[in-house]
Amino acid sequence: MKSKILVFTVGVVGVLGAFASAASAHHASITGVTQCSNGARIVKWTVVNEQAKLGTVLDLSSNQSGLGKTQLTLPAGGTGHVQQTLAESFTGSVKLTADGTWEDGFKSSATGEVLVSDSCVPVTTTTPTTVPVTTTIPVTTVPVTTTIPAVTTVPTTAVVVVSPAQVTATPAAAAAATPQVAGTLAKTGVGSHTPLLAGAAALLLFLGWLLLHVARQMKAEAEALEFVKSVRSK
Image (cartoon, rainbow, N blue to C red):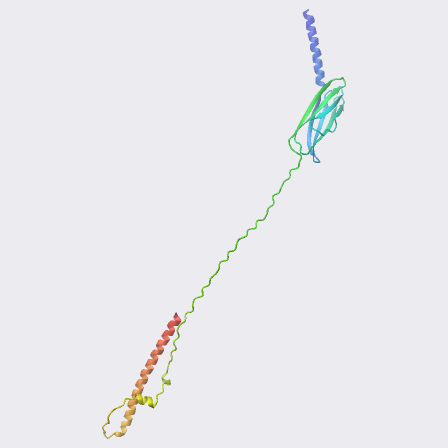
């Protein structure tokens, strides 16, 4: 009795093992790559029939639009390709699901996923424009006052210099300058010399007056020259 039960158990395990082996062979593998092309995000899917002995028909679907085809027929161990076109600005997850039916009627499903992190929108680099800055410096006008010094008027004293040659004695002047002698001189017997002595005395008086006048004129001239020098030195 025990041997029969053991044989049955082994038989069940053998059937389950065969079923699991067949199931593992009936599936498809899916991989995808993305790229930017002509202003769009392109996903290129590769689907492989991992069953080396049986062909399959795969129904394709995606969580995003833009699949180029919705069905693939692959021979045993065959490989197929499908392209999916997305918007240029798309980012996120793209999934492709393949529901397959093999020639022996076995069915299975497989899903592949691609994560798109960068948009295909070109990055515009803005070059900063340097604007020349014009600085206006205000000009301050400072009035300039010119003071013209007052003109000092130096009094001019006219000095008249009279040389001895310009002095002319007239008989009237000489007579006026000659002292008058009152009275009558006593006769000494030499009366012929009295007029001569009187003329000599008058001449001496005139010469004395003339010398005194010339001395005063020379003094005045010297003082005038000193005054002129002092004015020029200032």
